[in-house]
Amino acid sequence: MAATKKGPIFRVTGLPGDQPDDALKARLKAAIDGNLSEEERSKILVMIAIVPSCYDSEGEKVALLEFRGGFPDFLSELKANPLGDWQVEMGDTDINFDWHFFGFTQLYATEPRQPVTAE
Image (cartoon, rainbow, N blue to C red; front, top):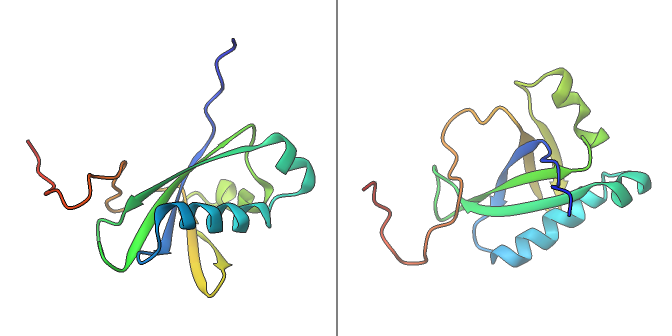
């Protein structure tokens, strides 16, 4: 089996922290699919990981996205301006896509109700 080529990784901020991760993934996937062309939806695989925000653990979550199979057209503005961000509505919430990762970004979720330590 051939190895799958890794795609560009984006960060999405502004996700509501009061929703379960599975529900956020489904809503985010729907928002992304709504911005992909029909051809892109058949060629691009979207990998989504929901992680806690390093800045507001109760009110916001963050997603890390990988687009395998190509760079989505709706984010092409970020290719031209890698220090920018792109905003879209997800229901009644505004979310932001970037790929500069300025600031802190947690790369994986921690165990619920367990302390975070740096050992």
